[in-house]
Length: 314
Image 1 (tube, one colour):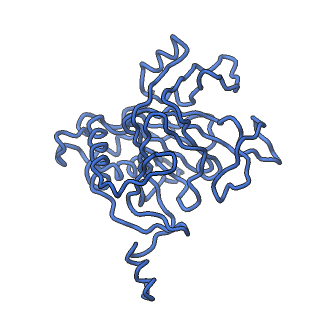
Image 2 (image 1 turned 30 degrees about the vertical axis):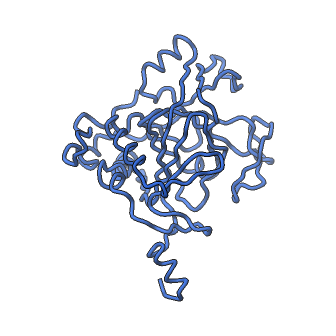
């Protein structure tokens, strides 16, 4: 089972800055990143349960819901989202804005993620992971809402961290079919809708499913970010089944096998899967925060755009 990455001193009490120990003070309590790696997935996915406390989760949800209405954008499916830290231009350049205090100051989530990656990935002969977060994408999922297979694109550094709030979901990971070196299953489905992946055929069955519980952190890196896709199926409940004993990769019609069972940190789910062979979870409203680094940033942000349009130098 994973080792807890915070203790009681890191909990929020009454929303006071002095109530929570800083991420730096607790950084060296982080165990090695290898303890959180999801096995048998291309390099690499890491699942960290209970990265924040229930009090911190409640606080973050409240601050996000208090955001000005113009901050929310709605996509065609009705799902809502926000961008913090700035928006991306059509050319993949970040037009920067200041990050809100509830992410960059108290409860210091950004610094906690950065500290975790630096410390947990450190070791003799190893290169430390560094994200340098400059944008946070906030997605709101109502029960029944999902998102189709997609890539986040080359505008971002191939290392992202996603924090789940409010409810669980199942994240599906997909791979492209390579015509010169095919990998199963060989039944093609839709093609990628991203500019980089246009014309590539996506395998019909996801290569893996991950159960993301509230307050968990998921880190995707390397080729899992650059050459794979991810999605969330549109449904109101999820059925998880125990992995078949014959190691079959055949997808069951009445449920999915998740690949991060041993990392969940939730004995009730693990016990239910062991005894009953399945676990059913009703989805509630989920908010995800994806922390990432835009590779190109416009100096001066929107002001720089205005200045350039007036013929001024950046």
